[in-house]
Image 1: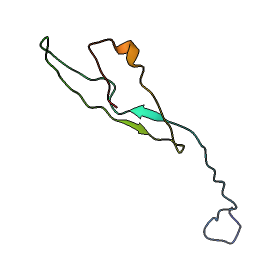
Image 2 (image 1 turned 90 degrees about the vertical axis):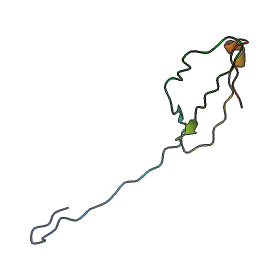
Image 3 (image 1 turned 60 degrees about the vertical axis):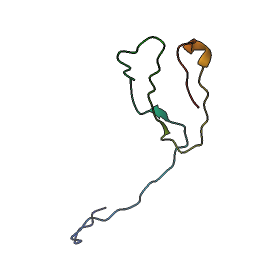
Image 4 (image 1 turned 30 degrees about the vertical axis):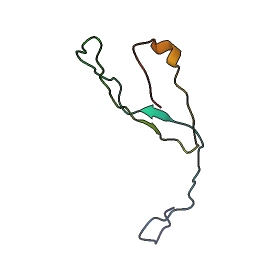
Length: 73
């Protein structure tokens, strides 16, 4: 608000709010495994973070991975 005769404008009111939601993100878009020798193992770590403000849980569909891939936990 700006009033004639006042040097500085002042706030008339402010509005604040909160949104509740879940926002899970994988910190990497891809995991590059490169060359892997048959019968050996190569492990990669990825991080999933919840940027929302509500607790979230998830499960991996390990059936879709087949016998050559595992996800822990």
